[in-house]
Length: 498
Image (cartoon, rainbow, N blue to C red; front, side, top):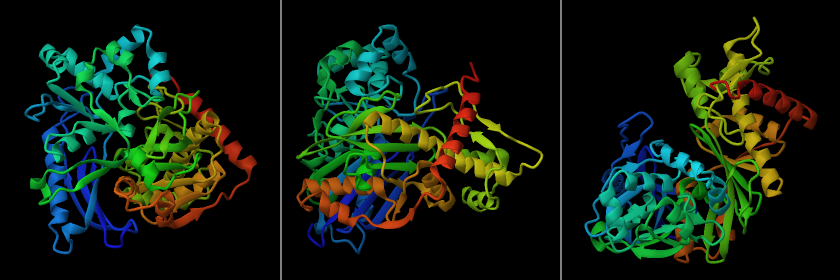
């Protein structure tokens, strides 16, 4: 990568749009951010305005490029990373959205999932796409929109309507309405892409009654897809890298070898493992998904979602009032040597992978007269680490690849006590990088590869720097004993709301 080149990464998330300029070493040179709103027209529904998503992203890009300290001629390429599964339909001729965006969190297409199960098709979707049918995924949202507006279905059959996830919508607008494409990582989240062939599955499209004419072209994750319309940024800039946010973070963490894994600690946690050049079949209802597709070939991943990690800390703050700030949990938890037998199962919205029990409910077990708020805080950090071990154990069994290290990012990765607890319970080093902007950075690296600014993955890996390594500090017997006790507590919480 030439020394003065910059990559403009566009990171369109659920709550904000960001534009970040990265230099050769992966350092953020300029950042702009704007919030985006969501609406909740009915309980369980989450919608957004597609035009707001585009305008916020465009304006952030213009802001960083207009900075006096930046020479726009140094920008070699644009990268896109995005909230996944969010579904947008627009008019192919005018480029205007024809419905609100249905956000990945929205449950409004749950009846479509029930219909799939009633047709006896659940296993077929899972075997072909690697995904467990759920309202989370884009196909159900497309079907819901077409079912609720017959005119949209007719126009879709006629080729007048485009479907896209967020990166596809941004690409359309960046290209001035000339390119309708999606990348393989985002396509794998629609529940319509055959994971083995990396093409739209005609039989699944037919089963969902989704016209093939509305689907975007699937492209790789690194390579020039288009140039931006000259009017947007003063000159055409190649768009050369795209990936969904979690896959982009996996790439940004330089998880390039099978068995490499990263965990993002946010409101919940997304743990992804590089599964190698072929899809991995999960026996634990983990998601088998694309990692990325480079000119050298595909890389697949296994993904496990933990619903409640950072939000458990928020609950201690906002629900119980035992801490004033999220950061205050670390000194409070560290004020006691352990949780004194207290176990907290934070199934506040059910349990995700590998339990998949929406009827599980939160439980605090092992309370005595000696229990203090510090013990509950310590049990909360323990619970975050135990939940992630559950996913790691399932991944190792599915992939047949033992975990050697876990790379971490996200806000809670700054909690040293949590990271040490995670290392103790996994029995492998937990590695925190110096640069935690891994989502946008991964997309930037893909774009740099796409325009030939890096010669290969080795150059990218050389940029990755360690902030701190947390080594396991307990015996394997203690590790397994503590986790067995955790699983005993989990079983107390399962099916509680049935």
